[in-house]
Length: 116
Image 1 (cartoon, rainbow, N blue to C red):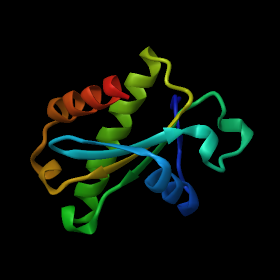
Image 2 (image 1 turned 90 degrees about the horizontal axis):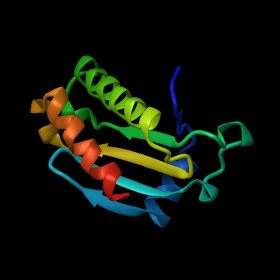
Image 3 (image 1 turned 90 degrees about the vertical axis):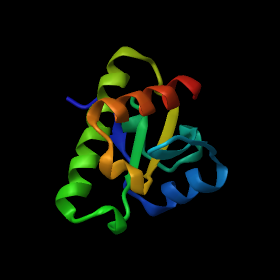
C-alpha cells in the first residue's frame, strides 16, 4: 500500500508552483507547500501529496516510467518512516537523472526531504 497520494489536477501543480518553496539538487527540482493550499479532497488528509513531472526530453516512455517508479518507491519508503502528512510536493527531473542510479536518487530525495 502506498503511503502517499498523487497529484492529478493541473490546478494543484500550478498552486504548488506559484505558492511553494523550491529546492534544487543535482537530479531534481522540488517545489513544495502545505497541503491546505491544494484542492485535494478529505480522503487524502492523512497522506502527503506527490506529483512527478518528467519531460519527454529525458527519454522514451520506458525510461521516464523507470525514473517515476524509482521516485515513487523512494518517497513511499521515506513516508513509512517519517511523518510528513501536511505536505504537497512536486518533483521535476533534470536531464542528469538519466544517468542516476537508484542509490544516487535516494540520497538526493533524502537530502531534499530532510531540509523540508
